[in-house]
Amino acid sequence: MRRFSTAVLAALTLAATVTAVPAAQARAHGGRAPLGIGDCTATACHFDVPSGTYDVRVVLGGDTASSTSLTGETRRALLPETAAPAGGRVVRSFTVDVRTPEGEPTGAAGTAGLDLAVGGAAPALADIRVTPARHARQILLVGDSTVCDQPAEPYTGWGQQLPQYLRKGVSVANHADSGESTVTYLGNPLLWATVRTLIRPGDLVLIQLAHNDKTTDEATYRANLETLVAGAREKGGRPVLVTPVVRRWFSADGTLNNPTALLVNGLGVDHPAVIRSVAAAQDVPLIDLTARTKELVESLGVEGSKALYLYNEKRDNTHTSVHGATVFAGLVRDAIADRVDGIAVTLAKPQAMKSPVARARAAGIPVVGLNSGIDAWRSAGLVEYFGQDESVAGRAVGDKLDGLGAKHALCVIHERGNIALEARCAGVKKTFTGETEMLYVDGTDMDAVTTTVAARLRQEPDIDEVITNGAQFALAAVKAADQADSGAKVATFDLNKDLVTAVREGSVQFAVDQQPYLQGYLAVDALWLYKTNGNLSGGGVAPVLTGPAFVTKTNVAEVARFAAAGTR
Image (cartoon, rainbow, N blue to C red; front, side, top):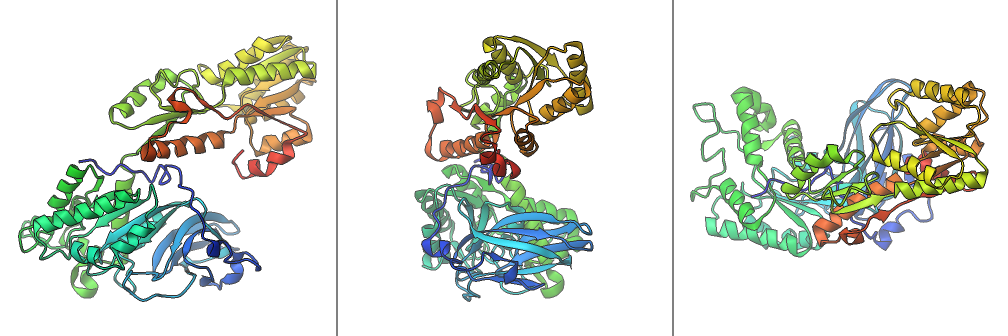
């Protein structure tokens, strides 16, 4: 039996499946202004959109200190309470599932479109933008009343609270329904038959059904779980079995060690035990929510645990309050993040990563490399690599310096032992026909970087080119040249928005862009393809190159807006 091994860290964090946007959804606001703050009042927003998945970007804050939360559709928690200082603005984004019915599958249709409620201790919604989500993953929930989007207070399912824990690019499609057992969920065409049509390759399908299987025998219960698992897999989904939340039913010794609390039905069927058994037999990830909630409820004791359930409101020891559902959703979130499906690493110092990579491989977790370590990734046991050949990039810079007429280059290395930085400067030296010298600086102290470079420029006034290995060090080199009253030009490897401005203004000659955003995207996307389809970019024997590409004053405008967004 595996513990849950699909990570929200891997978007949940593994790269998003590209999702086709229905034509109707894409046309949802054709011919009118984009969906935004004009569709809101101070306390609510309504967006006239068809069913689909939508990204929501909000700007929070006002003239005074504020604290804002957002719920949507059938009381789903989409954004936890978020503070903004007086005069400040905080930007948050999330992805939401819009469907009909908007709550329980067998419940009322609800209001068409997307409805959001603005709440919090001192709410302040400054701006909002709603757009169709073109790169989104789903977590589909199959469950009962302890999971579902409950229509009315005080009842709240943990699936109703889960969205607030997820980032943009991952939506929760909660198809849990009150009163359902494995038997009824499979038998109702509004339930499992509908969910199966919505599963896309790579989607997570969390299955928690037990509370209402009160008269289901063990053989039938086991077979039903196996049917749900097989059905999800047939559609390319990734089923995850979830044991049920405990009932708050204490034994005399202060524990929950009794059949009522631990979901053993009248026929003696131990539901959590059967779920664990099926998970082991079918090699399905497991979230043992029974064990997690048991530990929590027992730790709080008879009195302290009442707030998790509706004991005070309804004398109900099964269904959760908003507080309890939020806490239990957090337990699910923690379980999702317990173990990743893949790891992407840089190998700036391959020896330092040797042991962690070996442990990951021993655990059956694939590891890919990016950004640094192109000469070490295969020997380290990585399955793929995405990046720039730093030696090739350095040689390209050497050729570029010759073309610019440079005679004496200073290549600044800000981290000793970093093989990528060493390879870049070695590459420059290999092709540059002038003189190349290396200067090591302390990259953790920018003032010291400026001082050290300036000192070297004073000592060697014939240095006419400074090459750095990062945008921030290039800007420090510009300052150093000014301090040393040197005419040396500055160029650099790597890029950011401030460096783009420097290239545009001419204080930095050029930058070598290895496209690190692309490296990260490809690495995560490759992990997902490897896990779901066995693909290996480059056949597992050749790296995927993302650079070098030169950014100069003549082409900097083309990348400026992307650099401003942090993606170049």
